[in-house]
Length: 71
Image 1 (spheres, helix red, strand yellow):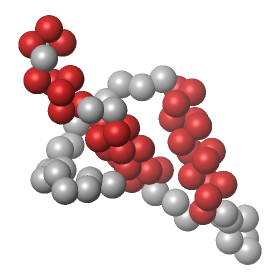
Image 2: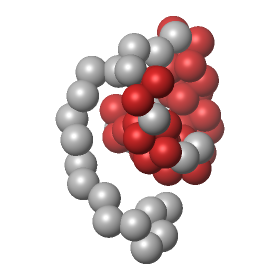
Image 3: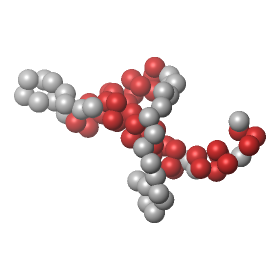
């Protein structure tokens, strides 16, 4: 995911739509599947973090934050 760029982990509060979170949870459950008792074992908080991180890397957040006009 990160390629050759050096990255760090930053904990932050992120505002997103309810529909975005619902989509992440639904898709994570589909990918993980359920066990024999019908329970899902997926950490949706980790999945949210993974999705946001990948979005920032793929959509050039680095150049976005370098532009003073975005502040």
